[in-house]
Length: 500
Image 1 (cartoon, rainbow, N blue to C red):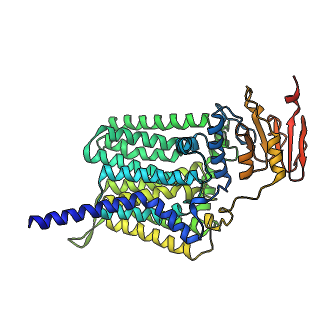
Image 2: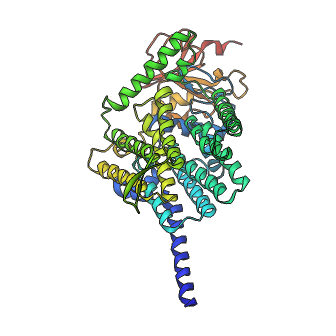
Image 3: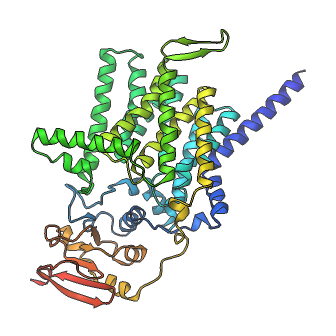
């Protein structure tokens, strides 16, 4: 009898470890499956989108010249401190260490994203020791989750969201189980780090504050809440100081309004427009709209479940408040409210921001054994995946040029070489090029110490940069002389640079 029990225990342990291994390998399985599905090697993709190129360029510059470089961003808007672009410190924080050790390749961010998730999954398994069924459920939720699939082979930061949420759940639930203070400290650090990366993560402080406040509204809870607000505000403020402004965004323009009446009108108008975009106006993007058909019903089901439950013994509905499910509802509703109020609900913006929260809630439901709600979430995810298979390719699936290096241009090469880096420059604009030529060749061949400023050329946002890199000038600019002039690529230098 004892031998049989030991054998069963051994088999259970083997299956559990195997399930943990699958969870750790989930991002690599996803990339391999993606490669088979599209018939291309996802591990050899090139950065293509503008955001990807900006991340890649930030790493390239940092590895070569550190922070001693020109300004990068849009329309010659410089950050209060430093010379980082609109993405700030994010690429260096997430991928700088990896690239410092292994070097920067075209696929470095893709590989590092997978490593982040694997490391988070391993931490999750070691701290929480989940059942095999739970580990496999989480693995499936990630590997087949359409929002993750659509960014798997990209050099975007989207995949890091899932690593961050896994770490948050690992540390938070470890504290719930063991009451170990170090786990709570690491949980707070994880959320603070998330706020630097994306401010919507401040909502993750709510469960921590509620737990530390003994799950009731009290002075203690309010003090913890105040600390969370101070930390998230300080982190966001520090990030804003070293990040180039994004003048096309609502938040940038809204915070610079002087009149209270205009301030309120802009807020209400923007929120109304976002709600119409989200619920009424079609986007023309089937997957973006498809996620909304999963996200909103799930949010409503969690709100309903927080107050009504089905008693399986008595076979009838019963009322009663369930704080756990209400917390899950808040984890979906509050990020949605933030997106509606201060960000955008079009052009994949809400998709990228909200998708990780939906996934994180589904993972939490799996961990807590909420089978019905987890099953409904899983069914929604599966429907979205099936839907993806029967519609025209979208996003990265429609990126047929991602797996071929862009064509080389001799004119662009010569233009990039004509832009000189001044290592002794005090003013960062001395090492800044106002550009409307982009692409991987430009990112690689312009000296890493040269900052690149993009956006429409206008008389108001041209003139500070000492270089102009363009195919042809769109406006008349004063104070520049041509340095290189060929069809398809031209370089101009600020005349003041030539003065003694």
